[in-house]
Image (tube, rainbow, N blue to C red; front, side):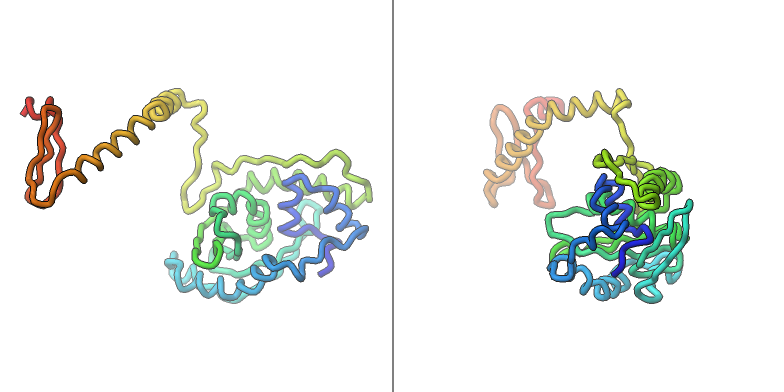
Length: 267
């Protein structure tokens, strides 16, 4: 597919990652870009898209009536945004959201996938004028997850600042020297499955309790291990095992309860 004359969703990812020069060479026609037709991962992702949509429809709980019924596959959108020609091939469309399909390795996580593809998702939502995107992903060959990512005008505007700057180099045929650093935009406030992240680095109370948690984590693990070991030492025919330090009693339901000597003394 010809990749000059526009900015696509995957191009937005590259721009935000700082991969300007290789992308600039492609957009100005100096190179054709890497041929991915024989790349197994790319072809696997392409071939599983239709099945991904089918699996999404069968397994995603419906919201707002038929919101999760995908009307058809592959929508191509073209729009000029802030004087930048934008294009995107969207995998599926629900009533209020788009659907983007991914097939990644089994070691990846949904959080990492969302962070990596956020520029593409926001680009596609802008092109389709939708308020959300379902990211439907296969992890390896035995795990599927789906998350709903909300549209963020603030994120998109910040992203477009970088996209417009990159496009100016394409438009004027000027080498974008020195642009090799990622453009970091915080995504904490973008709802994913109707929930956001919170940076608590400036919350002194949270940091204080977090410090206590870290300091006591090892002790807590030792406590849990000892508790488990003690219960394993109680025989199936024993209703109580005790010593000078504690007592283990079996209740009417068969569960083992541990009481320390101090707890026994107090009642």
